[in-house]
Length: 187
Image (cartoon, rainbow, N blue to C red; front, side, top):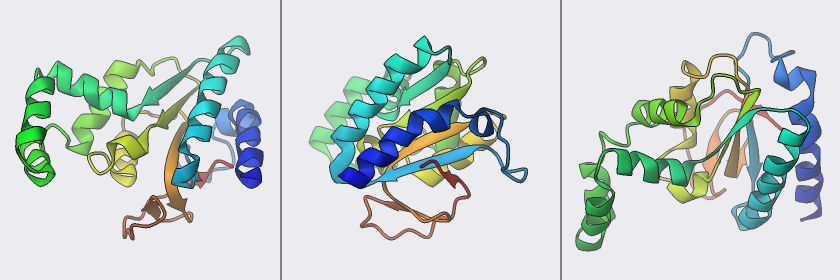
């Protein structure tokens, strides 16, 4: 936990740095960052994000803090299918639910909804969190790939319950993944 706390303590200064805010030293890559952590530390990470959400505006930063679970709920509400989704989940299997909602949960569609709802136009940066609550509906690599063309040069951080080795995301540190993604470790 001490190592996690040290990493959490470094986030604010990293988010406020010119290198982060201006996408410097990225070799032409888009400013996508991953803050990976062990899933058992989810509550500590949530608490830290809540603290950042209070501190950063006071320091003059404008950002979008996007809870992916809340965003998926809003997406289902906007489609008018939230209640029927709950009923479907009760009566059918998760596999059936995912198949029935495949179009709704297509990663480009989710990314478009997030960008529209989060109003990122004048943001200094974006923080994505709640990934563990929406997996496997939303996959980290799929969402980042879909957001790539939609966020422009706005630096984006994904808080990720799992492991990121600089090339592949491993959900929850237990599920093997061949999903390559280029992003930088935040801290």
